Image (cartoon, rainbow, N blue to C red):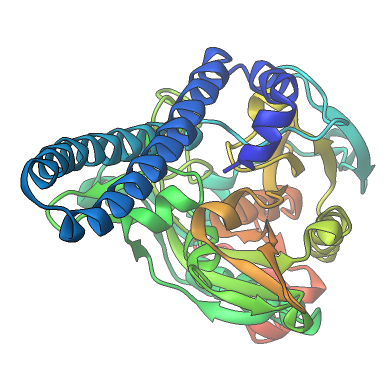
Length: 425
């Protein structure tokens, strides 16, 4: 959540941020009003309690009519104190409810607009000219079927649309990707983590996924658990309600977990193959840093993502996403989009978000520096979302006979294989 002091001191900045996100601007004034009611009712409660305590000291000393009058006043004060306490609780609850609906303050340099208003920051690698090579590229599903690697028909039979099996070399390719990604992250100083896939409501709400993203989240109503859409959620909540020592920072974790997404609102989009699915595995980077280090850490996470995609020999572009395409927790987000030959466009493979103090405030994760305790900053970055990475690998490294060249970084994790050979023609 945002800092309430910022809201009181510079409400126009919060309004501008909400407007840039395409979110409700009126909520800012509603929150200011609720906050004022909370503070005034708190003052009123304290005044009445003080008066009540003072009266309590007089009653034992009084006698006769005076005591009766004081007792009557004490009864009236008691009722007033209860009413003020209830009003204080109600105003505080309303302020908190509204505060949780306001997104993080967007970075001043981020492009304004919607999903298509991103700015390309960099293009890396060379896209293959398949026409010059003399053959028409196959899409990832056709290649996956030739390799005996992907089975979407049985995935649909067992679980429905947007589910799949990775079989044979497909399963091995996932394990190779995960192991190679974890190896890179570990070499960079990240602590590997295997995280829970089910979390309590506070963990999901604390990371900002029960706001605008709520429709995409699976909820197990009977047990009141949520299935995570990314290990960002359990990694952010790992230090929930803790005060970390400043000397411990930065803390960096690389989480591997299954991820579950309803893909609400994507009917008809990417229905072929495994690019957009309901369940997938992912390696996620997560950092806890001092707030003043957040921008530098964001740049580092982007560099680690670029290192990963470069090691996979994939052509990609880096974009600065626009305000209307941010998650509620992020102040800025960079995406790396790999070239998908049969689609003729770049598609998102990784993203990294700077959440500043937003998630830490909601989850009560703080840092102690001497006698000072304050919220820290959290950041996240995809290292490897497995199915989309497999899509990009198969299409970009395919050969005319349907085989697929294996990038050197993955060969040690695939028994030294240099090429994945078709099992069916």
